[in-house]
Length: 159
Image 1 (tube, helix red, strand yellow):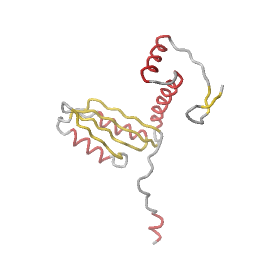
Image 2 (cartoon, one colour):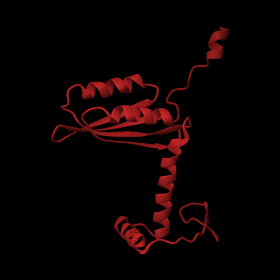
Image 3 (tube, helix red, strand yellow):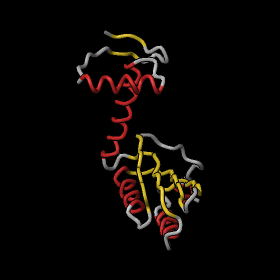
Image 4 (cartoon, rainbow, N blue to C red):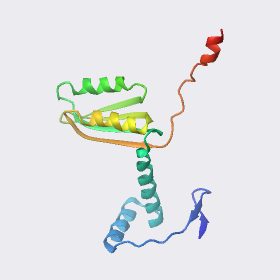
């Protein structure tokens, strides 16, 4: 059965699914706790997030996303190593945000864009440094519009 999504004009298709009772109970808890309007809405969001995360495995597809790091800032040389990696990959690293936390901890969020495999490799380099407590990369198949148009090289060569 096809219908219209009340929040947009996207067509909807009705499906049926079977779940173990325990999973359905947990789903209903999430729906209630998070305030979803329906099970369908919650499942659609979860499925969408899963599909977006799996697009990161597409290799050379250019994606945008974040690398989130949680680390001890009193580990010798860690912040310098992270800064050097951000500079080394300046073509992929768009921006970063550092938040100093209690107990000598830092939360850093790095905005990146580039081929999915390369972004995962950059994240792996950062997450495996001594002192990093937690790291995660999240990518989506989208692009950041260019901040400045690139110069037309053909016009420069003609002059």
